[in-house]
Length: 186
Image 1 (cartoon, one colour):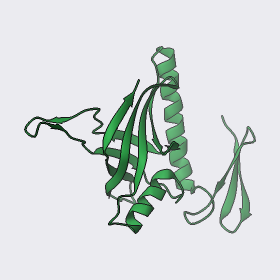
Image 2 (image 1 turned 60 degrees about the horizontal axis):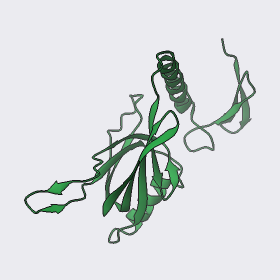
Image 3 (image 1 turned 90 degrees about the vertical axis):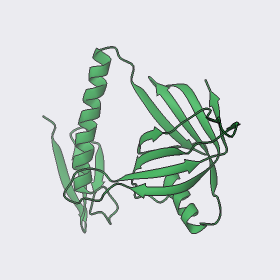
């Protein structure tokens, strides 16, 4: 059984220390650390993820992952990417079309994470397309297997899942990304 301790720092901030000596700052949502409720969810998510990795390793199944990069910086908190097409043709018009991609991610507090910075810039200049190079990277056992680079990508919509304070579900942010084309690398 793991042993932990919680030590008061100041105000409403506490230091949680594991039996391995590693620590984390906990505080209310407006404080410098992770809230205790988020810690519970992180613990549950971490235990579940570790169990899944153990099961897949015992079954000798490859662990697959998707990584998203904005201008070469890996974006965190990504739940899913949908609508990704390497090539899409409008047969009636006889031309290639660039369909939007939907990125689903968790809402993150840090204003400097790549998507938050991009969304903030987009909202500050609604009449201007704030573009980025967006790469969706398929991973297999830590090795990149394929990369789709969306050229001149820009955010056309941001939507959120329902807010329910009685639920333990994370709030999802759904970002619709338009682009001028996709380059695929194998």
